[in-house]
Image (cartoon, rainbow, N blue to C red; front, top):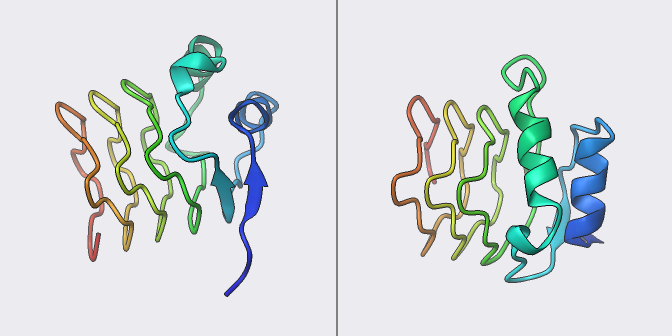
Length: 121
């Protein structure tokens, strides 16, 4: 098993804002609350991007119990990602690739998961 690269929420957001899209194989601090990071800047940036053509890839990553209510992340590639206990209420995950993702205990209340690929999730 390959060790995951530890990353802070701030570093994660900075990488996305710098245009990086392959953030697979990382681990964020458990119970990270995105609303206490640069969430507004991240949201504004993501809403201005063509994420269908150039999606964010967080496959094989660990995001245990993160709090990202309302996150705008359509078409995200999150194959085999561990989202156990994540708070993704009202998140936009339209067309997300969540094959094999661990969503045990995740809160997806009012999340947009239309056309999401959830096989083995």
